[in-house]
Length: 162
Image 1 (cartoon, rainbow, N blue to C red):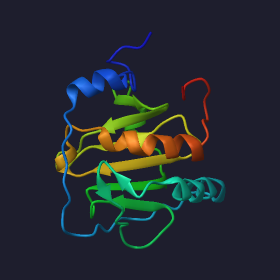
Image 2: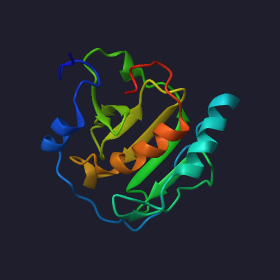
Image 3: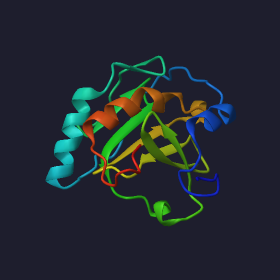
């Protein structure tokens, strides 16, 4: 039995009740640091890059700079994915919040400025999705990204990925 005070215990149905769908395109292309994962994790990220959709939450693909198979973006920086990021320190916090979306569990961090940051958990490499402030209460982009993450980045801790 999961409870909402445990990390990653919030099911997508409950999250959907809490989060409203919003979002539109901004005008500037994002610039993000490219992760430097070990070779095996970089290979998973390259596989993920081949699975990523052309649109996420209605936003067209618009990759950040510098160009890399380890990063992707949609909506000119509204949605940015980085694959092979370091394990966030917050994952050690037993009070960390999270959601499960389409067989992928994500830890949620809410920085003081900007929108939410989600990092996949229980996978063989960490995938980070940063949303701008328009998505402060919206997990919709994760619905479009969960399938590709599930197909390309294997579970590291069964049965936790399901």
